Length: 236
Image (cartoon, rainbow, N blue to C red; front, side, top):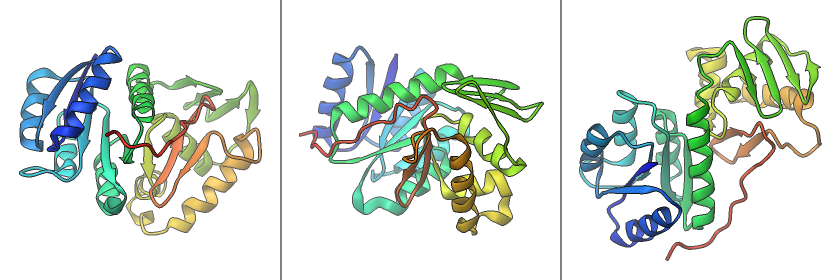
């Protein structure tokens, strides 16, 4: 599968290219958003990995441009000081993020997760069977670990958004808009309460395994209870 890597730091692109190629992927490189978008339109990669801070067109603008013409998974690379930019990229449609410095094992795991999610493409189905979950959108019924679970309409709506975006980081703003509409985007307390209610009904243990917190950003849904372990290891 073909991966487009976008970063203006040659050291980063060298490390990423070597690791991805050794893992069996074909890799294309771009040094900024303008070059990346041209490459995207020409070659239609299976996944995009992009830095946020770049000349000419940054990662947020690149994400916005790609989302106007395609739904290719996008993973953004950020530093800890880029919290606002990271959330903005996710709101524009990026699927995941990795914070520098990071381990290649973590990045490769997130690449695999996004490619699996892209291959499943459950968005248009009326019956979703994903991991431990079976969801019937017409009957508004849910089974978790082969047990019926009764949800309120809002709980069902939230679970459906998660199920249609497995492994993807969804920001608070994205989830609020999806469940409550534009009027709910500035009411984060609604989401905290609803997530807590949903967790009580679907989680198998006191420690959340399906709905995972992404601190200061939002939530990630892992329907297979196979959450990714993050390690703070430099790529250099």
